[in-house]
Length: 444
Image (tube, rainbow, N blue to C red; front, side, top):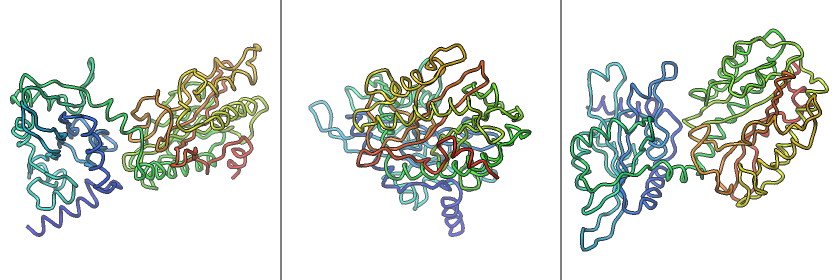
């Protein structure tokens, strides 16, 4: 027994919780915050299964919303959160409750996957930070007791259309087990969680900073390695090596290294070309650290020197980014849209009034994507974009110009967060920004 307990403690420090996990109190605060928003509802959320969440290269990755609420990175678990309800004539009072459900031990399977924390373990509550930890088989009976008559609302990650979620099959199992009476109404929890996830706490901001610092090392190494004859795949592999060496578990998204014409293709990810003298290369590559993403793009001249035309377009893109940064006002600015408060409009107007294409036309039509997006557990993180940017938000500002006729694509993407004083902070300040800085960084 003692040997097994020691093994489990080692597992939690170096295995299933090998991620740089935040304190249990942070996850508990999120669960309580969600309970307040549910106003009497009950959350039923499942982790991914080993098969559904398995990646052939990087292994199992937890569902983002499940990890946000629990900090639990193992498959096959579930969580129930019941928000408090006052007593009425129709039903008794119900206090706040939270339960983490873990699968029962499967000794045969653990020979392949290693020992797992079981709900019977005396340390389970302290290790997970939950008020209760139970075996998954008990979930059905607990739910029946939590759902009050004559009406109850169950929140879960309800898929739309042909989508599926980590909870789809498990909810079907609970339905078959008659866990949900006919008076239960179901609602999608994802919009509510998206609003909560939009504002990062201090621990999340630190994890994104670590993902970004590791990714900066990758981008810096790539700038040194770019030269004619090197393949795009070499550049992508070098960056992954550098941020992996610094603790990132995986890329935050499929690496994009596009040169020549492919520098104008936004989501080019084949990375099969060879860098050619006189072309530009766009490198959109970043890592994920303890489930949190970064997202960085740099554009470089393959021979180490921008042509006059390449520098002109590069300077316009940089000017658009700087104009958006200068226009930022916490609590007022939004990322998207065409209102006067939209940073996208500021950047677009700058691009459209600076420079021309080969036919004398304005360049605005070559800025073909949004100005930025939130960053967090997902590289394009959850949350409404109609809400003004405010302290705790982390996002990219990434203007670009893509002119296929000239085989000329330029994107500069940096990550920013809004600090407690409402100031915009550049996480990627350590990377070169100006054309001169890029050229200098490429010198070997």
